[in-house]
Image 1 (spheres, each protein chain N blue to C red):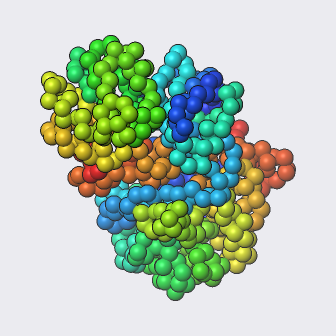
Image 2: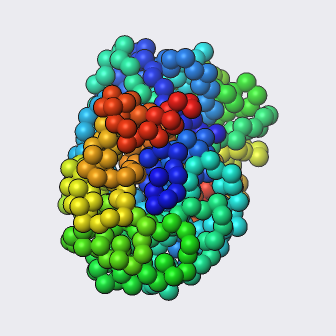
Length: 254
Length: 294
């Protein structure tokens, strides 16, 4: 059940990870907010007539009762959030959406394009104790890489693709996927990144299910406005905020 | 009280901003009522993404009446809305009079208090706002549905290139019990390259940006008709709701605010109660009552 009431949370720590990406650790007040990997929060930018709506941001990690959000500045709202100093109170609504299915004793492949790697980190931390994890991180420029060491600390194998070729292999993430999949027995694939990337991974995976973490411009984030759909292969739309954001890519039309 | 029917309080969740009432039943219970997303005769997939854009002081949406159609609404959704403690209003849409009539005839269930005729959706090619711009069509449609339903009949009007006082009178003359004023205003949002941002190209503007115009319309319509006016347009807090009541609305609908936080309408009920008490307004006793119950 999605929460109906928003909660106030204090920004505990803010760190700049790259020129465009920042990380917020927040501490929600009086709540047992316990998100599952794949779920997100609607974060309200500071009061401003231009920024009415919440920004849907996935949980990148948790620690005790604290939440970590890793956010790329893509517009006015995320820019406003990036300017908030530690100590600021923000209004958040969540956890929202359907989480990623969890697996045990499997070979797990995580594919994160750009900032899409963020929600996969929280998933990796939950899956790490009972699965073998391989992570592919794909970025344009080497300086856009985030969380590489964090994944390694979890014991995950990490592969990198950069378009500028300054780290890992030169190319895009999906160049690496076939090679890795060939060597994995019964892999379970989770992917988060641009639609084109998800589409390609789903094609490469053939009959294997791929759990895609989707994003879309959202209105409410809670399933009541029907603004963030993705076409189902069987017709009609799924609400990304409600039936997603984690969906079996075989069921949707990317 | 609206046309002889009691509501718990004067705040209703507007169509399209509270789903079908299933997602947040606990909030729906506490409001005066909820209006469902628009229902059409046949299922509708809706418009392509993106369907929403943020603009200064508001949002522009282009959902395009995505809904499962009347049959599935009746079999899959209505049963789950049984025993709702607040009033259930079903918003109905179509492109021809005949469609409205057919839907109205199929909605005889006791749990439904009212039908709201959507003559004002800006996001569909046929029907929608085109119907609400023509007083003659408003008249024909309202009277046709009136003949087939005993439910409270509300007509949701548009103010896009038409004087809502004229269409409100047409609705009143044809047997409408109330009018909702106003639906969203036409909007076009362009991206940084000058291309339409919304999948449906144009959309409907809502939120605080339209409040002054909506208030103007409520004031104007309330002076033109005797039937109650339900005020709608940019209500974000109790003070906004109070202003609509002062402008002549009997009840209000809250839309955009629900998208920000699902319990926002309930917060508005409580804020409105405090304001009305402060203003010692006896007219709004019911608001106070609703608040005491909590």
